[in-house]
Amino acid sequence: MDERRRQQILEAYCSNEMRRLKQLCYPRIVRIGGISPMDYDDLYSIALDVLRDSVERYEESAKCEFSTYLAGNIRRRFDTYVRDRNRRKRDCPGEVDSLDREDSEGGCLYDTVASGFDTERQVFTKDGFSRDGRVEAYLQCLSGKQRAVAGMIMEGFCSQEIRAALKLTEREYLDSLRDMRAFEKIRILKNTKDIKGKEERNMSNSGTLTLEKSKQDRLSVASVIRRMNNYTLRFDHPLQRPSEQWSPAMKGNLVSDILQGNPIPPLVFAEQIVGGMAVIWDLDGKQRCTNVYSYQNDGFKLTKNIRRWNIPYQAVCKTRAGKPMLDSKGFPRFEQKVFDIRGKRFSDLPEELKDRYMDYNFQVVEYLNCSGEDIAYHIARYNEGKPMTVSQKGLTRLGEDFASIVKSISAMPFFKEKGAYKVSESINGTVHRVVVESVMAVHFLKEWRKKQEEMCEFIKTHATTEMFEDFEDLVLRISRAGTKETFAMFDSRDSFLWFGVFARFVDTGHKDQEFVRFMKAFQKELHTRTVDGISFDELNKKATKDKAVVVRKLGHLTALMEEYLALSPAIGA
Image (cartoon, rainbow, N blue to C red; front, side, top):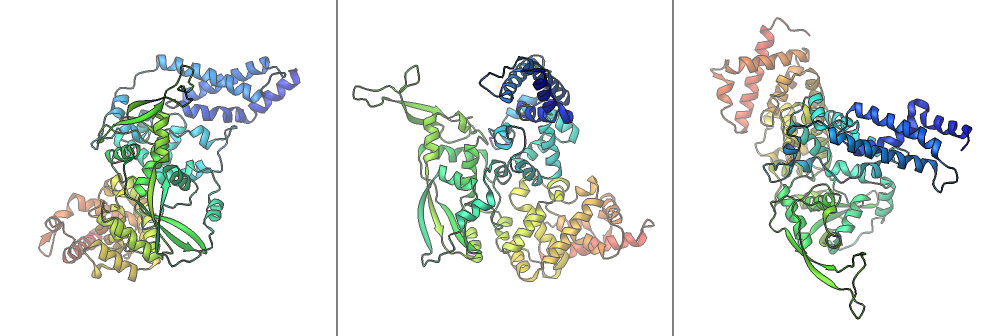
């Protein structure tokens, strides 16, 4: 290679602050994991040295392109760097132990972190660019805190450094990762198709009507996963509950049953004609499908707490060279083996069990030509077995439009990061209940219903989209004005009361910060002040949500708020 050609290559890789060289290195650095900003600088310096050396050594008569030659050299030097770094790496006390120990459900906390998802292969092109904006789309569906975690992970910070920088407890950090790896989010990264176009092509059966109400079929695991990847099988119906409802033991027993070939309850789908296209919605079986999908993608390893872990299978005998051993008639010889699946991911299984897993057939029941009401009816009916929580079942009574709005509001950062809500409450529908109760307390207190299902039925008939928009505005306002101290008062039990009082406060025209000061005063002393001879502490001993109790509590808080505003010298309009 002549000097002119060398300079051209160096300029191509080093211009714009080594943009092209960094694009080549970044996916490889991401895969290393657990590195600091100092390591980034070291690795980019190493890559620059390798570039200079490769330019000098490369022969244009070689069979490979220079970019391939350079990438191989960088990979080998990075491997050497990682090996040497690990030899001298400082200890991280408790890091391995804290992630490897089992949680209260028998699952390994490491399962919420580790994944077999190949970020470099699936997300980046060979030049380091993101494929079709999937990373950006994935980040958009995360909360602010989760985006910060994702950004630091991509920058190579280890978990201890991330928790320290973002002031997260270990449990908060792991809960964030668990939600970041939920099926609905990870599928954005996994999809490699033109989703909209593919969906339209596969669903444009022009809505041919039939007198049949239902049909039965069978689908292999491989077919289900393929349909999930190309979005021809939909799991995002507004009335359907989220994924991640099952414990680690339930997931493990599902995989075990599949590998044994045991029968599993049928999957239930519904065909709905939308705009002349047939959309296939999942009605019952979302947890089965999403966990099958997740396990096939190495999303979790099997817990030790499963009913049957030794799986027998038949394997072809092979020579030392890996070729099948044949008998005198030319047929392969077989041997019986047993494999312990505890602690194993899909990639750890023998090929025979991988094939058995992918070939397993689900029974499928599909309802045809369903209306929106038909789908709501079937979702509620099929979830009476393992059953939806009261909050989840109530949501099916809201109708598609309002259910979709409630889910959108529930995904706001306030409910994800600021209020005193558990991650499990976002999954099991409790936050949806909070939103519904709050809208009821703000707009329909006199029509309060104790039962969640009755409340949802009432809202479906009497509420308007503007009412939900008003509530969303309340959430945004309290998010901006509140403090960590007052956010803690918004929990799954009392949130509807505070939103109800805040809505009444807004009508007074005072600045939102004054309401926050009222909440602090309430927490400090006003909770013991009597109104009509009784304090809120005494009222709050009744945890019931009977209409009379709720109306009295909200009236009591409103009276305290009005008294506070009348006496406070710091009021500003």
